Amino acid sequence: MSAADAASSESFDVGSADEFPEGSITERTVGGVDIVVINQDGAFYALPDRCTHQHYPIHDGELLDGKIKCIHHGATFDLNTGRATLPAVKKIQLFQAAEAAGRVMVTLQQV
Image (cartoon, rainbow, N blue to C red):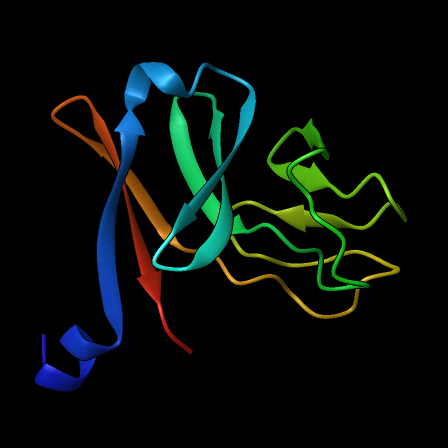
């Protein structure tokens, strides 16, 4: 990892894995950024807590198979690619999330 890469990302311990039950969407603020942490099928995902359509929060969204749906206008975002469906046209940024020693770690990458 180059010095530039190291400066552009930071990892945060967002809590015990037990705080994120299967099928959950959990709000957190890390590094001054509002995010949601999702546990689906034993995998953790993290993304900004704002829909790219009209910037409504998505922590109150609906978890679908491999996607989160914004309840305000129905846009969905793929948890693996960030790809959006209408009415959103801009994909959502995904952050790296993983479990390590029973803790969930999220890495915020600056773009």
